Image: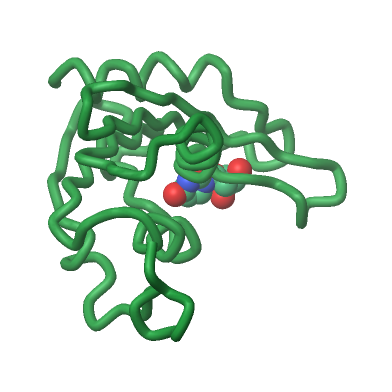
Length: 133
Ligand code: THU
């Protein structure tokens, strides 16, 4: 497991997931090496819950970073934790198609994907007239 993956695993401790009991941690590395971490934060009304990946992305963007290099995602189930469809689309807004997605499972099993592998033929800002970033 590399350092970024280890940061995602550390974030499992911070997850607020009393409803699903499924903690997820994330660590997002920007082009300049800055790392933003995140965890899932659930809500009694369910709908407002946010995934670990989006927590990290929103932290990065709100601090002025939009140039993402890699994201590590950790969960506790045996299969390496892959990002949900909503998080894939949110990554697509800011990340290059070659963004590396490093997935970690509860027993340390890992898997590596690119964003375009997990979200092929995707819709993004360039499809819209005001989509210049
Ligand atoms: N979850 C994440 O944080 N990231 C994912 O990519 C998959 C799902 C969270 C959302 C919810 O709090 C819990 O895991 C169960 O779906």
